Length: 267
Image (cartoon, rainbow, N blue to C red; front, top):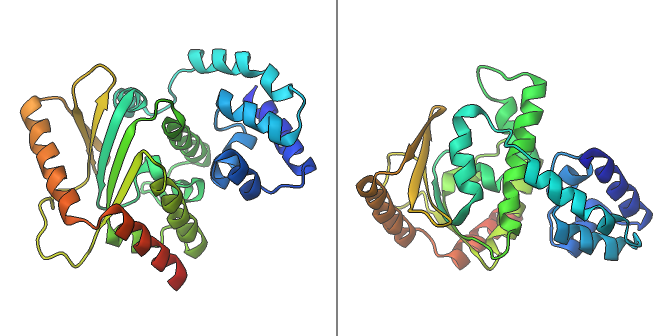
């Protein structure tokens, strides 16, 4: 169903004389998200279909499929690897999510090209089918940014992560642009931890804190592909306190976006 819908969307966009970036700006999506929907690997949300119908002059064609889309979304089962599914369910239910990244851009923030580069470079290698499936799954998680009411997000990224050109110059540039776009959302606070900081409260690696709707805060981390979901209150409290110190030592959101813009200008 979504493959056919994606082809119709692409046809109508091209008839309107819009490229993916131009169309994305009109509907509030990035070009990677538009590409994913046109290829049928990302589920278009009802509000997007309504907006697309109006902009592309589809005369109700996209609106007519909204009930089927909503039904398919209700039936949909997560496609994530089994070891990840417990966290993926909690993430989808999150009313707040806070992450500290030390080695790479968080999957929730990745562009399609960056995600594909990450999975392609993995060792031992993954087959092409698995790579494409993992990329599609990763992009599907980003629908959390479109929820209403929107969850609260904060992200602290080590400066070295943004300086590492995973996938090459063009992929790197696209990823920086994606971070700028997300960092400007009203419910997102994005900060960079400068490499030159002499003091650092957490050299133990990346971690995520989230609060699923109606539940207590939990923490999640991965080390060399080994996941750990933490629900013990004391352990979560320690990580939350550590995250607060990390945010205090990082550049503030305005300074962080300015630094990303400067990195783009210097490319």
